[in-house]
Length: 508
Image (cartoon, rainbow, N blue to C red; front, side, top):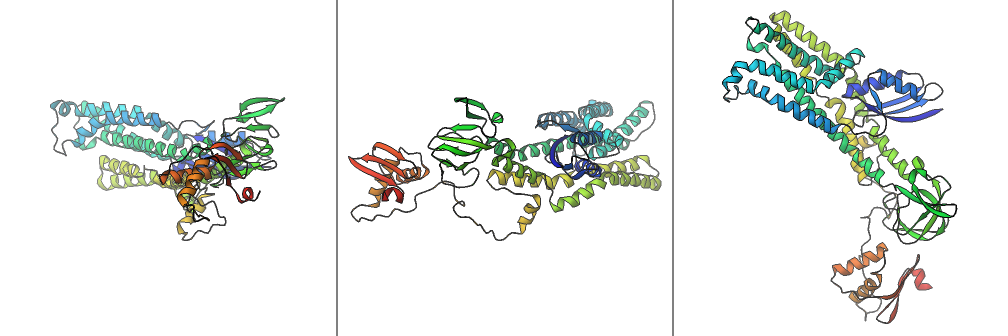
């Protein structure tokens, strides 16, 4: 039996992390498909329950050095921000000591005398602040799954320890040239990597905001009939078959079928319909829509993850997690990227050492190759763009089913819609006033209509009142106001009985 699961994964820092997890999962017997999204930090897995269990899948992920996060936890933006600020504070003096002279900035005699000792102390502080990057990189070496943190570890550790050894030798009386110290390289790299991780976390947080907005449409509580009594319960406690009560102005908590009452329901959040839809006995209602005018009692038919809104959220999440064709190529490159970079860096360093016979020059080349390869835009660019695209679209009421569809959309030059009435501003406006009696002006018709509609909550009534206000028309107070469900209203104005509503009302 095939099952789909979505797991939140902790500890991913780059595209190669996602590639390693995905590759390892796909090798397991019973897993039909596995997609790991770096930007959302989630794995979308289809598996055969007869061959592998969810517990086994979690074990595979943990064996690679990553964690399965329970629930939606904070992505650590605050901690990453603090790490960047602290590393910058300790790193700036090092940058000043190394770059100050080049920029013609005067250097205090204290810095000139103890410059290398201060650099060693400050770079040690930066390394301690960013030590979890080293830990992450080292763990991935042990698991034979090197990632971008591994590159940072090798590059910064090489520069730092080489400089530290030279400083010890210098203190022992040996003559070590200044260009054999690279404390600033380890500081520069860690500060910028910390900034990059902080910015990535901000981006990830923003891209998931649209999903949170959709989830926010859901009602938190519902009023149900229990043993003949009205009881307010959490939405998670509503079961299929429960009788749910919804008063005017309340949000419909879940999907169901009306068994009693009549009302107009605002469904534009789900369907895009600008006008309230009349609901009578036997009609379906959708969770997260708003009951506008009357009282409704309905039987719950779909709850929890089965509701229409939950299915919409699922479609958007899957679209955010799916991979565009161009990303598949990037993933293939990312999987081999880190090992290839380490090999190239080693070969470059050895080659230059054999040519120049200078360890400092060879180390410079080795560290430079690793530094240049550190940014992880290759694996993050496409999923972040997809998440931002689908997220912003969902916020504006447009659902994109897959990343492939989003990528193809760039070539679209014509859009054909098969339904009328939904491509609107979401609220009606008065566009024309037609008088069938030349003795009554359009202004007088609008004045009468707006005066009697002023007490109605119907969107058409609000449109008429809005038009009157825009035209500066003074409305009078109507008496004996009464709404006629599904047809219109009746009221008394200047001792005259006024009927305003549908053709059906006029005929009756």
